[in-house]
Picture (cartoon, rainbow, N blue to C red):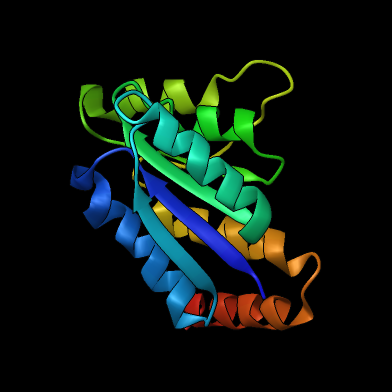
Length: 147
């Protein structure tokens, strides 16, 4: 069964990141939301990374300001990581640069500022590569957008 870990650096990011979970849930894709700051709870982030390696297929990680959560997760796991820069200051530009400017060998797929719905869709596309059921759900989602 496909599983998506949705992470955020702070409870203040919940309204934005919850939209990813709502979209995934509406297409019967399992997800879990966890709040863990790469700066305030680094040990917890390492523990979550171990859980991701064992039980999850894709990570969606959102954070604002010094948004290092997605990059830290990408450095700790072999699963695809999708970064969601969150508008917390500087109109989200600081977050966008933090998420997208990664060193060679540690990629983070980055969506638009506050783009958690697109992160969920990208997660579905990744899952659809090896899951025909999710591929059909993705086609249904695209059809829904065209209505």
